[in-house]
Image 1 (tube, one colour):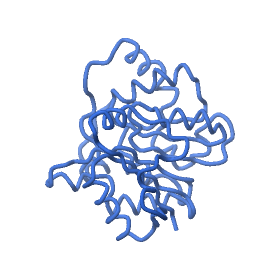
Image 2: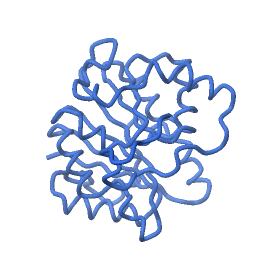
Image 3: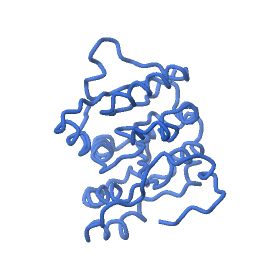
Length: 233
């Protein structure tokens, strides 16, 4: 993974992700990064023509920002072969875990990006996405770091431009403050409408929800996930 050069577009704002690498990768994970990632990794410039990213024809493009271990991304890509999925994950350990599974599944409708999702959203054509997911993002709990939370006005601008009218932006978190923050930011932005119709809708997982490793850990520790769905108006 190459280092960023000083003065690039991504240096103009704080990164929305934390560290790039965690624990030492296992042998199978290192092999997957070296052998599998080049087959699926997309260049930033290729985002200008997203339909051409995939070997076969796709009807829609869906984005997942920060896919972690890839449980949701892989499950939905396997279930929806006619949809092209772009998964973003700068954290190498999460990318490596997902690649081990992806190598066995050999899905042709996934492409991967390992840098800042904001950069990708800026390159995607207007109204090119059927939807975008942001599940269990880093909550940046310290007040001085709140500016690094992904849900904020400029990123909502980027999402609103890239998601077509009628498309969905979905958010999940087990951090109540970030959930409240997200509801306030999205309401103030105006391009998305929260779809909840009754009390408790936000406690119901999304359709075909496979769960994630992080969610399982949160539940085991007594934290309650919240699931928010916003319609691009």
